[in-house]
Length: 541
Image (cartoon, rainbow, N blue to C red; front, side, top):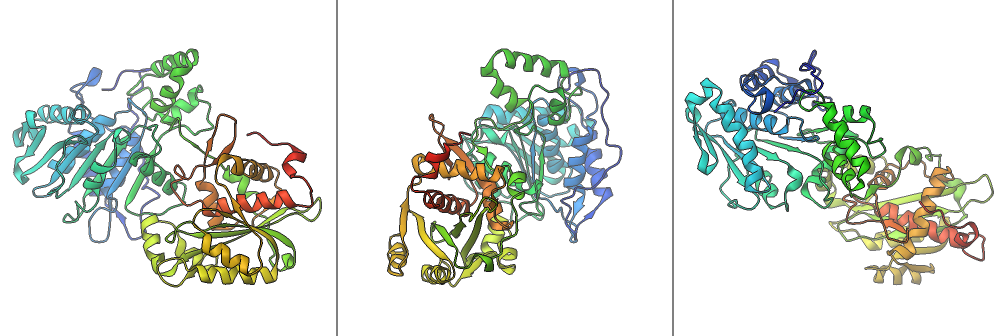
């Protein structure tokens, strides 16, 4: 498997430092970690120049093994039950996946352990199996105790009656799994989420420490199970979400990185010059520069970038720079415009007020309000791994009675806001808000339907970005609105119009949509007879 690249020696892990995702109650059990590392290093490489040589773990591989197998809860079982490793090709993925599958099957002390190797199709699933079977053949201690059924793609470990079995998305039965371990190879190639759901939801319940080891290169389909998991891993890595059972590792280049820069290759490829020579990457890069059609494939496979994807739109450092304090009292009586995104009954309802500036030095002030049903709050925290409960405690999100959003309560709330501020107009998504709109009109509000297509959404979306970059907006650093801004993905049409892509934005963006609608009304009416867009021309991003 490893090629001799620039002839580097193996980089070993000099000093192990436990992962920052170690839970407060967990301890690092050096003995358990040493055992797992020792087991893997008794195996041999099976391919290429290094075939037959001991499987010495490279520093980043050893870090993963120690973190996953050495981090134990107070009851002595493993803290992490899901490890997500996203890494470019030729980094030693198949070998690491095969070694983990054998460790779970033959070295984990579990009686009748069921370990499954999953992939998109039989051919793909066979790759890791063949590596594992060769590792068994080359290891005398295992070879004595293991039976390889090559035609069934099954390995049986006789002492505990455990097995490792290959499954593919095209052929698996629906039930009867009692899983101790699953190794998913190239998760991004899964055609749908069926196999993933069958393997990960509930099938390991009878075991004390099932492990789902997901290893993949970046993909291209942002509506896939892999992208969903990638987003979760990214959110955990960047501190937006918290899940003590999930261990995330992503090696890759950022969207903004220069893909032709060798430093970027180094950052994205932790085994560069060990398992793959830098000359190989250099040649692939030069070829991609000559032929633009190869650029995406180079970025996806060599730099582990999700290409062809909608791009996370808001640069959060720029948004955070607009966290100017908002004094609600000083806004009393001032003209403002509302945006209302009701979403469905289960979702978050958002109402945002935008106050246009009163003079040159003033900013557009954003005042957001959010509601969720009280009864579903705890469920949401557990399901979405988003701190709604904390936000509620600090008064940044309100709950309404029952298990669906109580519209009457929200209408009442908006009515009270109307007594405090001069709400000139309320824009709303014209879908699904009929009754509420009538009620608000009955209270004397001017309510304006707002289309969600490119035509209506593009100008204020671009304008919001412009005002953010110019620091002409003040939002007081509202945490819920920040989270939603960060969730936005943008879709553009051939004419260069943009709008928030609700499908790609896997997380909630209701508050951001409500802000964009309120801003639009504010810009159109702000002391100008004509549209402000006509006056200043559009910013094309």
